[in-house]
Image (tube, rainbow, N blue to C red):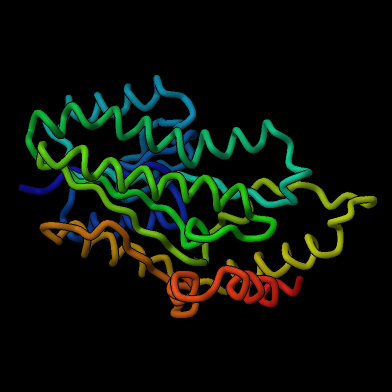
Length: 267
C-alpha cells in the first residue's frame, strides 16, 4: 500500500523536489502552499495551508485523512529566512519568523498526532537547518528558530515512543533554491553601526545560496529516512565543511570556534 505523505511548503524549492521524488517512487503526495492556485501544473496536489493560521492546518490535514483514510509521513518543510543585526530587526519580524519556523511546524505536529496514534504508526520529519546548530552573525533569529525546532524534536521523540510514532530532524546546509527571495532582510541603514559588516555578510550569504547544493540531495535523504525503520534523532545534508562545522563546534573551545566563524564571515 502506497504511503500517504504531507509536505508543507511543497510548491517550490526543497519541498517541491522532495514531493516530485516521492511521487516517482509511487508515494501518494500532498503539498501545501498559501497560494495553491499558482501551482495547478504540479506533479502532486497543492492544498491551501498557512502554517501561521491553525485553522488552515486543521482543515487541510482533515481533508487528506478523509480522502485517504490515513496519513503516514508528514514533512515540516515550510519555513522562512531572516537576516539582520538582532538589535535592528523589528520585534514583529522576529515573532513572525518564529511563527513560521517553530510554532507553525509545532501546530502541524499537533494536528496529525491523533490520526497517527489511531493508526499506531507514523513518521514526522522536521526540516531544520545546519544554521540551527550555531548562532550565526546576522542570522541569529533564523538560527534560534531552527534550533528550537531541533530541540523540541528531541523531547517529542521520547514522548511519542509509546505510540509507534517516529520523529526526526533533517538539517540542510545551503541549497540552490529561491529562499533568499522570500527572506526578510533588515534594511542596510545608512547610519547603522552594523552597516559594513552586515552588508558584507549579506553578500556572502546570498552567494552561498546561489552556489548551493542540488535540492534533489535532500529529496534522496528524505526518501532514505522514510525507508529507515528506526530513524536517528538528527540528520545533516549538505557540503562537507558545512556538516563538519557542527563537529568542530562540539570539539573546539567555544572562543576558538567563535573566531573561526568570525573569520569565515570576515568580521
